[in-house]
Length: 240
Image (cartoon, helix red, strand yellow):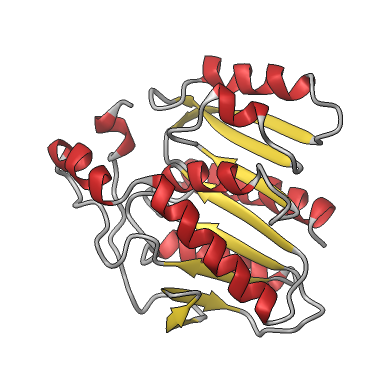
């Protein structure tokens, strides 16, 4: 992994940001929740990158999904200990405490909690670190559809095991999971006609472009909005 790029442009975290609310326990985790629970509504599990669930743009993505009829949960899979910003040297040590495998086990508990509340249709989307958690979920029937955004840690073998409709949104300028790897994922998915898939590489953007950018950068905002539209289209097609 290209650690410097993975950690680049960290967000300014804001625990009170968003139109939703934070609850202390949802499936065992502190969670940002957006939207009103309605058994007729599908739910979306959003899984953050290494900077955690307090990221304002991530929460804004959740709030926008609510406008399209979803109930959205953004759990704190990092237990209040996101990656320290601007200190790339700590990434390896941090990952020892916060490996995606633990995130996957926690995610299953969150999905159980959603199903326990009567929600039957659940989709999941993950950013960077969170994409690895989502691809693990996509190997089962726990979710209806998956979206990976500028994924990290995801392997060719992971993609071979995917069982649910999956969309992969990659970045052209990405040393973490470069375009040639994204294209390998696409080639594997093309051999699995039973698994609907959509793969797109966004031109001119770096790793993390969807939720880590300067809000005054009009071009960056437009690229993020394009990715959100792609994510929404996929979820509408396979989760609703």
